[in-house]
Length: 214
Image (cartoon, rainbow, N blue to C red; front, side, top):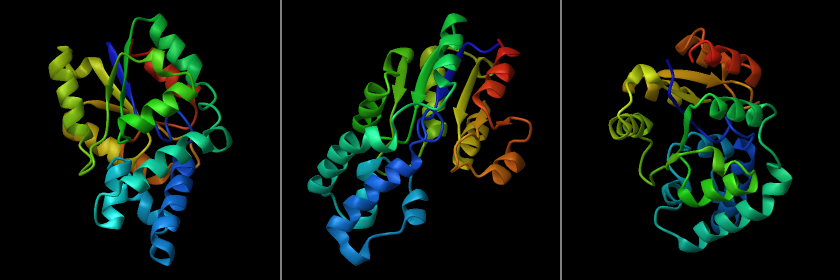
């Protein structure tokens, strides 16, 4: 029986992948000009948090670029990511009503995660938060830390994410992954091959599947 569910953010709670790519693109164009990486290269490094991605492509720490990223993240949110995915609020309300503990495990930095959660009015739904690192993506380690710290069993926990790396992290940690495949950025064929039977194209279909495990 599920007692605790953690969520990814980008592509899971909100359609924010293109939004993040847009912000990165503007920052890299400002600081790197024609040497700026393309969107696919940026996307492939999403496991690191935003300062980590900036350092990866710029070769060193750059507080100016990081601060510009946070500033643009706030300014462009209403245009590029105005609301959570349809059905997310209903899913979170349902889970809270059933006494499920909810959390965030994301590759984002604490700064951008809080900007988005506050803007989208989602923060109060969650009981715990695990943020990304500037050097690597270690969601498997974060999941294992959460399970140890909370005292729940692995079969009482599930993770909701949208990326192949999320499925791999869950397999490594030995927990179930419910795949959110409702964003246009979802790589459905890869996800279904890796995690058959647990890839959901609508929030409603995932909610029905989770309900069977409560």
